[in-house]
Amino acid sequence: MKTSRSFCSALIAASCGLSVLVLAPKADATNITVFTDKQAWIDALDEPWFETEDFEDQTLNPGVSVISTVGEIENGVWSDQIDDNPLQTTTWKFDQPEIWDGINAWGGIWDLAGPGGPGSNIAATVTLFMDGQQLIDQEIPSTLQGDFWGFVSDTPFDEVMLTEGNLGGGFRETYTFDDMVYAQPAPEPSSILGIFVLGTLGAGSALKRKKK
Image (cartoon, rainbow, N blue to C red; front, side):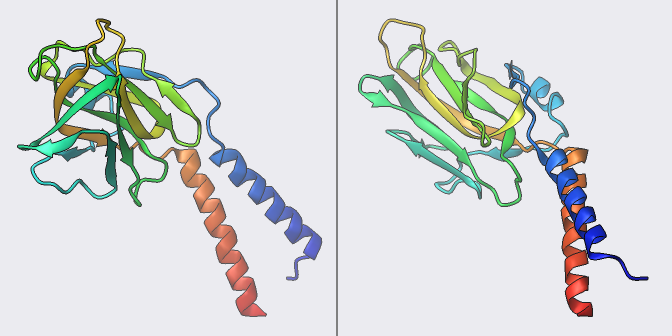
């Protein structure tokens, strides 16, 4: 049976419209929940999958990179210093080929109280995937010493920037960081449907060219 050209065009347009609809990002405000218990952080993940960077060598996990003023891997931990004057910051970046649109959870074991004594806390800002930046309301406390601190976001992100907190006193924050964990959000059914629609369209176009 022959199909009219106008009908095929209408079908493709409708399918493209469906794929755009299901792949459109959510317009809701981003919700970020902070955890001070690692098991609670794991329980809050979309699924119990996460990666760990243990800093046992000088090579970071694939897809993980860092830009830091003075931070470095030292004695099996990340050793760093955050300050406003002079400006010293650290930004963790996540760009893994198998991650479609960033990660949605991040954390680790922190010691802010030990190295040099408590400072001014650490503020964390996430770069949301194609959607600007958001400062996390709760800072990493300067009293942490071998404790977990992390968060889970309902919007994926691909960067975490650490800057000096607002505890006051003008003190820099010297700290160590270990067993950094991060997790990928589970694909939404609507996203899977959108990819299926696009794949079907591609297969249909290839079949049409083959018949010609």
